Image (cartoon, rainbow, N blue to C red; front, side, top):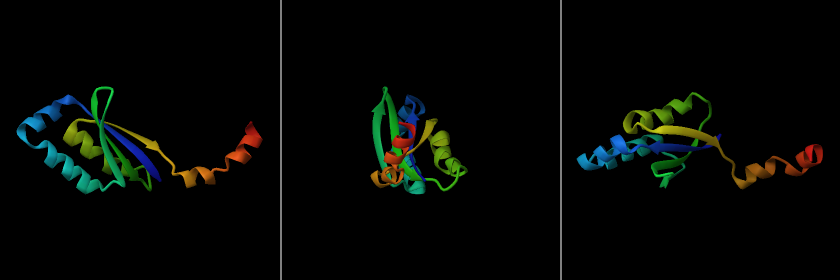
Length: 101
């Protein structure tokens, strides 16, 4: 199943990693290990944030994806299931609307 994974990275220790030159290496190591379908980096509510699209076949895979951010970045991690447009179409909204609308 496809998930949007959001890793919120606090200023510390990340500022220290920038200062000592290890920030880029650490992030590249994580991305190389996880190989997300897509990765975007932005600010959310004033916090550095990595947003990844990852595939999880079972819940135990959250460990594989989350722990590098927990251990290397002291990050907070969230997972949100997401759909492509064709997934939404398979959901048969018209039938659900008739039944529950």
